[in-house]
Each structure stands twice: as structure tokens, then as C-alpha cells.
Length: 171
Image 1 (cartoon, rainbow, N blue to C red):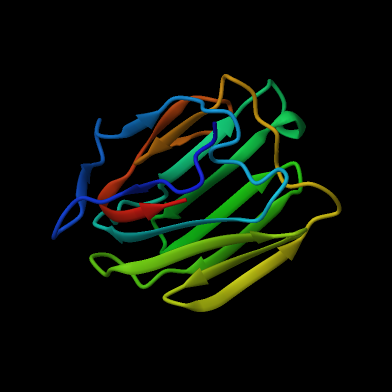
Image 2 (cartoon, rainbow, N blue to C red; image 1 turned 180 degrees about the horizontal axis):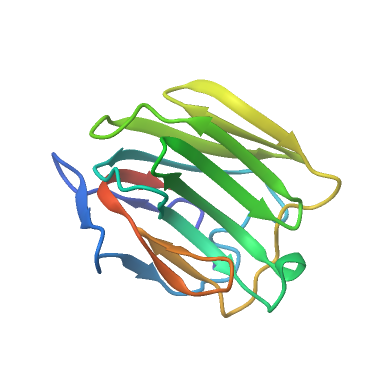
């Protein structure tokens, strides 16, 4: 069995994450969140509420750390305190960054994998794309966990708690 469509919604105002210890964890489910053989889209509404200095916070994180930077697998989306947003995936080395709308502003993000091309859309407008030399950043194994509202740092530690609202998360 496989999941072909997965959605999470928090009601009228979305799901509030306090930046301290709130997150949602979805255990590994083979091929559910990885576009290894077919196209895939990850989309969500986001409204960050933090503006601390020199800090980044994870929005969505499907990441497997295997000891070295070159052995990373998965993908993640995060906000940096200077207003820069990122969507990264490893293996194909996709990395797209853009300037977000700012604190307390709702934005719709959609990251689309089509063939060997990855494109990031913000509010329906393409903000960047990247072409892989091969497969996307997959496959991950049974140790990969989807975290919503929590990011993993470069050494595999999940400690980058998102502060703000997320809504209508869809795969």
C-alpha cells in the first residue's frame, strides 16, 4: 500500500507552533514522502511569527543523516531570521532560496518535483528551480521521519523548532 495523497489542516487559523517544543512527527512509511519514481508536490500555507537574530527554524523536514554531509538524504523547508526561506533536497543537491513575505504574513509554498527538475512556487509564482543530474534526494530508509514544525540541523539533531502557523499541508 502507498499513500498517494496526505493532507493536514488546523482549522480557521492553522496549527500554532510555539518555537519551543511543538511539532508533529509522522513515522517512516515506505515511499510516502519521497518522489523516487514519480513526480510529487509538497505544499502548505505558512505564517512565521519569529524574528530572532541569526536563527533558522524548520517548517517541514524529511531527513536522514548518515554521518557525513554527502550521505544526507531527504528534503526540508525552513525559514531564516533575515527573511530568507529555503527548500533543499539532497542526493540531487537541489537548493532553492527566496526572500519571504516577512513575519506574520501568510504565504502559500509549493515545491514540485517533475522528472529531474525541482521548482519552488510562492503564492503561485515560481521563485526558482534546479535540475538534477540524476534521481532526487532519495531513497531514504526506515530511519527517516517526517517532522512538521521541527527541523534537523547539519549533524542530524532535531532541534530547530518552528514558531508560527502552518495550515493545509499536503503531499
